[in-house]
Length: 336
Image (cartoon, rainbow, N blue to C red; front, side):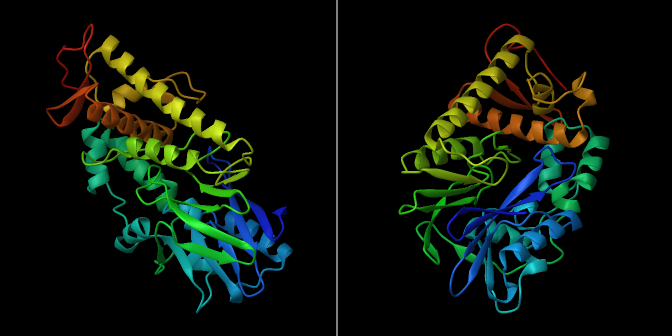
């Protein structure tokens, strides 16, 4: 259940049943005075059982254990309120911790819900998406007062000195941790090996893909021998992977321009329907609802990025936000 990666540094693989992510990597650092758990899995029995078994195998005493979440998604912090003992500390990046304090609007009438509707997501499916979203179903049972971490802060555990690096993109306040002496990078969902981090946008004011690409460039210069991602396999060729991720998103952006040029103006939902995805289904309509949700959010992020670059144009048509690109059909009317 627990794998020792380096001296006093362990990985516990926490299952995420029913999720395409498959599992979460929870990292445990041990020291003479206290231990630290980084990311935990969702607030569900399968995650709790696996994490507690791994912690017991290592010999972790929760009465001397602190917790750190790399970002605000439920698969990374969902069990912290369950496991955090009185008097112990929980950490999160200041931006995401601020969002946690205000809670989330898990309804179709929330800003996120209204923006999804304006992006073309069908009303009935939108209701089902909110009801079945893992961030809602498996959220923590209470709010924790997280201690805020800022760029340059150092978290010391035993022989490890983990410097906080702001890496926004996957969330507004995502943080990563870097130990230059160990040449170790703890990535959360900023850099993944087998899959690409999902970058979503739910606002006219945000350009998370630009933030993400800037964050990739920011960490690419670091001297990293081993990268510990939030999901799947460990990464031993860090710099190659950061370049691959940047190239992937530029390719996705180019694909969207091709879709809009060939098919004419589209809302984000219809644009996502015409993109290529690694999901086995006979048609877009047969995608699982939540996968259509994530795909639409990713399409919005790329459309916002292209809009800010001046490569697509956006306008409001009826109740929907519609994007267009120059080329055949690019100036056609669309009220979808």
